[in-house]
Amino acid sequence: MLPIERSRTLQPNSVTLTLEVEPELFWFQGHFPTLPILPGVAQLDWVMHYGLLLLAPGRQFAAIDNIKFQQPVPPGALLQLHLEWHAEKSRLSFRYSLLSEAGEQSASSGKIALC
Image (cartoon, rainbow, N blue to C red):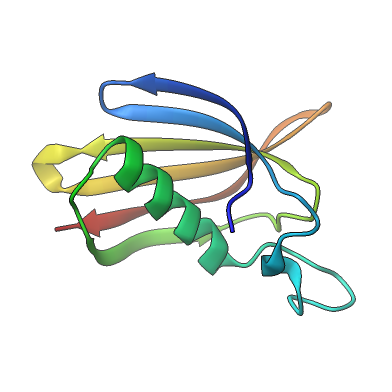
């Protein structure tokens, strides 16, 4: 299940998306009952979805490098997802930022090798 896409800025080798994380997404069910947060696997699923759709069609997952989860993503969050495709390395870099009135805060980042 995907978030609501609020905006998209597409460049030749990158894309920046603004995503609304609806509280009703099934990803929040049971993760965790008293303090729901968006699982890392959901974040990676969205990176693969948008990365393959918009930047690297026809590629497949090979490996994950340097993944970091800095801040939990709560239900109802507004996220910015920035993806960069490095064709020479077959690598998709990603960075999620939590957006709020107070500014932008890094949520997670990493690199995914594609083949």
